[in-house]
Length: 167
Image (cartoon, rainbow, N blue to C red; front, side):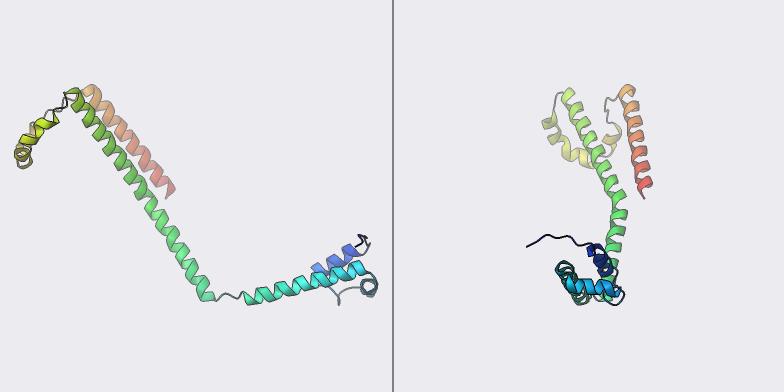
């Protein structure tokens, strides 16, 4: 195996790449390819690869209906993702607020002595007595209530802004 370089190799490569081989070439380039083994091998290998590419491209003919169907599926999936993103953010926000409220309830009850067991005997009467809801005293001072409501309004505003910005 010899690694000789030929001065015509670049010209042969350009002719093969542009599709000018053999009809669009000068007669001296065709004569050189017949005499030079390196250029002759280059032409044979390149033409073999080009022929294989043409055959594989014609065998991979995909029906237009299948392409249209896949494009419709992709379009619907993207539309569904765009629609569901704000709802997902709102659900996460609702879960976070619920978690904060639950933690606040547990902390409040912890400070009052964790007397949850005393609720159970009174529970059936409380379920059906709506007048007792109005008499509940949560012991929330304004120092805690006002900043909490302000923080909740601020977070809600940020969530609404982010959701409306993406859609």
